Length: 622
Image (cartoon, rainbow, N blue to C red):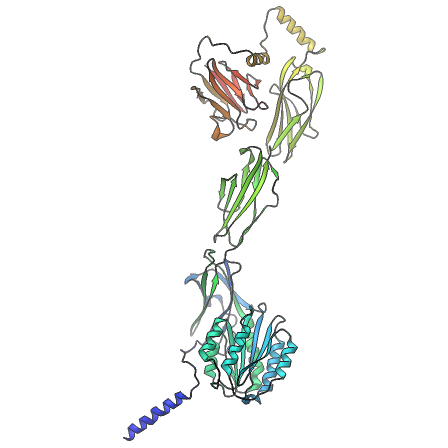
């Protein structure tokens, strides 16, 4: 019976002891080391920046930790490439709520608490905000958040100690005061006691609110406080607790809080995620000899803006020849693709640096064209830049002569040459024979017409720029019968006429072809062919089988491709007629030559004719 009675007494004492314990929940043993991610910056995604602190069980920062002691993961996937370094965080402003116990038990300690708080405030940055909350039976917001140090100091000096302690309500008041702030939110709690049970809020609600609003609590206890309870409150909210035997150590405690807030680490890495605008998680782990500690933080894989610019091109600008499109690109991530479209047709897709495109403007007709540049980076950001540009010939050359103009004597022919990339030379041809060249401005040619047979002659002016682009101008002129040197030609003509010799001038032959009606062929032509003697396929035999044959420089729209920039994109056509095959020049300013005579209209071909267009030559046989 005695043993049973003793056991009952023990049980009753245990129940009574539990009944008088403060109303704190039970927690698993906290880590000996604390790691707390205080901020994450995803504004420059895919670059993600994490700032975190590592402190020992007493709350002091652990400094100079090597990178090898940290590890990083993103959405549970290990990240190997990152940088981490100590960081004195004076950049991020603080919003601090000083929560001071002014219950009756603080009568002796309050002056020391006020003095230590004033020293702490003096060390804060110019952009840091401070609020003051005093508590006894209820919480009292003595001073709202302010950067004015004088207001806070006056509020501290006006504190008095009396009454009970509603500690939980005062911490809730501090969290609510800091809610709207974007700075780092910190509560510094100074007390010599504990919650007496008169608060409307309990411990769990305080922790939940602090975590919800990312508010870190740093309790400083003096006298007869419950150290374990303050430790739990701090660790669950990202701060640390300090308990000292008397108020004389409060200044050092405040210094420790500030050092913990300033001495941190900055970790930076490039995310492997796509910029999907969704929320993701980054986890930092610190491994030390006795164990490890981790903290994670959510961030957004933010979509970014790509800018595309051209320093040498603008809407409406003229371009010619080979054009190098080299856009300036600023992108959040590395560029993965550049697409170039001309008039909605894809020209090229560049998949590696340098992201530029060399484009031949002769591939399109002169005039206005729309150019679109699409850029994509490695995380999926995309941007488009559109330009309206005017394509002009790389080189143009004109003279003051008119077609079929009658010339005599020695004449000077001024030439107007336009070329964006400078002129290398200007050449002058008479009947396809080069007779002069000029390399300096002003460009002009002197020609003694008495050096040629009277009659029609083909003149050709050729300008070549510094990048070997060529511009041509051709026309036919009539050299009249003249005295002096031309008397020799008159004598020769009279002599040959007297001998009954008919001079088959090619120009007259060509004219008769153009003007005389075509007579029916006595014998139908058999198996007509063109044999390419010079050009892209020398020796190739083209069989004419009854349909239209197109000749030109543009590959996808011609049957026979011509060589050389002097060839037009659509140069000439060969068509069957009842009397044989005819050839027709499509551009009178750039004619076909038959037996070295220009054809500016449609003529019948005769077996043995030598056809020249651009740098290509063909022998017609039937």
